[in-house]
Image: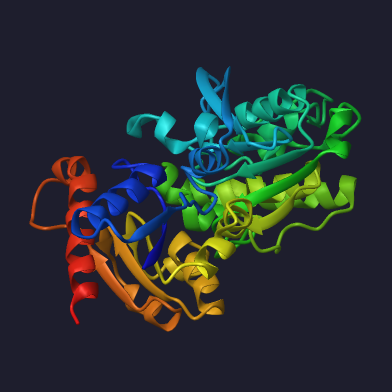
Length: 376
């Protein structure tokens, strides 16, 4: 038997490669004759750089840049094994985990540091950039990123605005003349794990603003600010981004990438599937095991388990999903080629303890699954 192990990270518990290894350990403890193919996965959110660097024998580049609150932060990005492709995770330098809960406020945060990492990647001479945009602390429509790359956002006095969500309504004009000329020669792919539009009821501010620290009043202000930015983008760049699916990802960074650097939005999991050659690995396996920190009703909207199951369906392979927990709506995955699902939580415990015991619980759950598979 050959099993393809295509696991996502379990947030704050284990990376994708550690999750794959925990599953492999469980398989080997029951039957060493089963061959395992480990494929660390991600969906464009946190963990994408690690999954792709690990999966292609790439390397890391470290930089000190501007953080979400205009503070100095240390971050990194990956160069894939081909030496020509950079993978940047915006959460590394513009992410929510970099801001203390008491300081979270998307009116004040910026994607400027993400733009600085793009500059660094271009200095490495890459031909392709993959920008993973999950886990943001921001709602600036990508203005911070674009500003770092040389785009000027000017108020009525021809002064540059501060590139953060709360200042977008002050934009009177957009000056693209200073945009780094190297951008036009680089293919930029935006790895996105949501399909929300730029503004409105399902837009960046309304759906994600509160989890980043916005009040109800802030959310209205932020949404209006993004509408103003979209209007200015249409006026100065002749691009209409407001209702494009995925434009609202990462506080509108998805839309900003479309507008300012000609990025192409793609489901993050599809990008990872292609780079890791997952399709061939599934094709040559008997069973597929996938999983993530929590599988729920959101998983069908482009998360890892959904993407892996979609590939497996092409080759009529059975799919087992092992996740940290099963949340509301997880049953929908049974309609999308997941054959059976298991949570790894063994008993009630504190969240800290559950996170610490994640690898062990994943291995133990895998062992029981392999025992079940061996029952004749």
